[in-house]
Image (cartoon, rainbow, N blue to C red; front, side, top):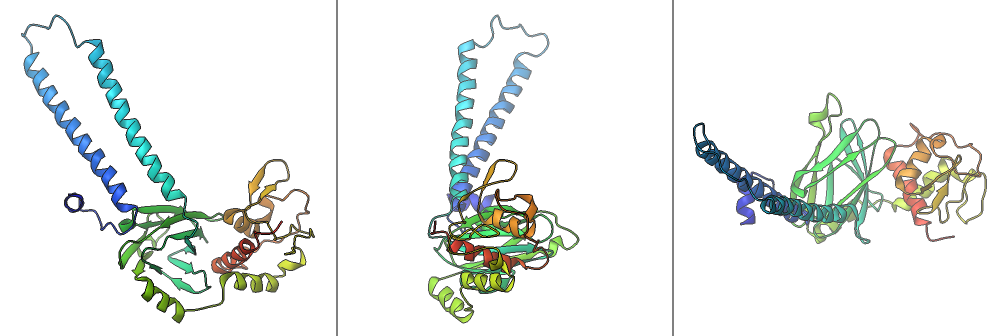
Length: 311
């Protein structure tokens, strides 16, 4: 039945673990809307005939108990749909702990991907079937939107910050990536594909594209860019905060407030340091906008993330 409805509505294949549940809610909402529309049409037709001009008027209307019951039933249905939809949304926003992180950079008009071992690719994202994959995404220019119809996932990609989306491919194949946000004259050409591969084939492909570990690459880049002149990695304060234990910690800000040192904050701190100044440290850090590419910034963030276990 599910497959029959999918074909009837001309939906793409259900190629992720999210797709079937999302489609099922979709079918229920559409089906309920069609049933209600049919009932309303029949009632309108009945009232138009029964109470046309010249016909006697009823002595009493619909009892209040019936009106209250129908209103309560309608409200209950919408609350149930909200609960189911919110549960799906929450599941889609919280990646599993064992998810494979892939850094993704969008720019006019292409997608760039950096794998955990440091290998990089453009436009085509290869993933193993059955393995949760988390994309940590940012944009180098304007707002884009990462959309894989077959996975039922879509997430805006915003310059100056990071956004996340995750999925688990449940079947091998090639599934189209689209940009769902108009991003300029070449918007229609901003296409790619998720290539879902059996785990053995994916491991063989990754072995053939092996690079240095992404965190190790980030450490080398940090040394080349002079980051260690101000930041230590052993927990000792210096001109800037130590990177040891920085990732995931709560950072007090100049002027009040605080922020969690996640991918978005660390990326913004490299590209626009004055935006959120760490309280107690002088504003000495220069901007790395234009000096670091997206994959390079991702590598440094991954290196900082690898030091999160310290105090």
